[in-house]
Amino acid sequence: MTKAENKTQATVTRVEDFVTGIADENQRADARSLIALMTRLSGKPATMWGPSIIGFGRYRYRYDSGREGEMCRIGFSPRKGQTVLYLIDGFEGHAELMAKLGKHKTGKSCLYVKRLSDIDLVVLEDMCRSSLAYMAAKYPES
Image 1 (tube, rainbow, N blue to C red):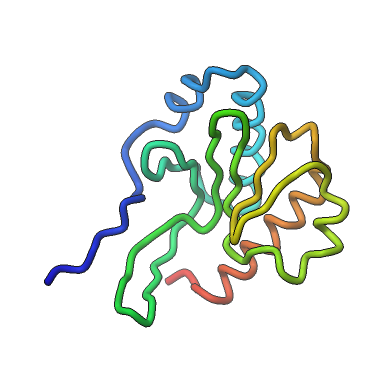
Image 2: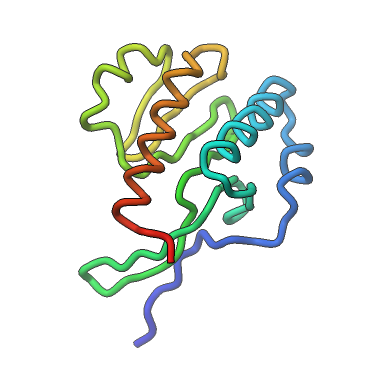
């Protein structure tokens, strides 16, 4: 029995080609702003993961079940009508930051925003920095 491969893997698609193809002008501008922010914070270039995730850095994980794979340390995906930011440390312990962030929704490790203009970018930067610190501690780069 072979282990299931992670469906979301790094691709050779050029990030700029993907961003240029984003139909909504504001979302395209937001994507460019997020690329600049996450590149600066992570120190890693943007890479496409699967068809629609722009990720920065990578880490290897292995679950207790034996499933393992590789994923970006931080990233985002411009989706129809919203942008999803992937902050792997989740949102527990960030109640104060979340209260200051602005208009958003959350999932387990996903932050959903309609536009960057709806949120406080300084707070978002703090959250991204925290997520990257968590990843560095949990999954040190080799």
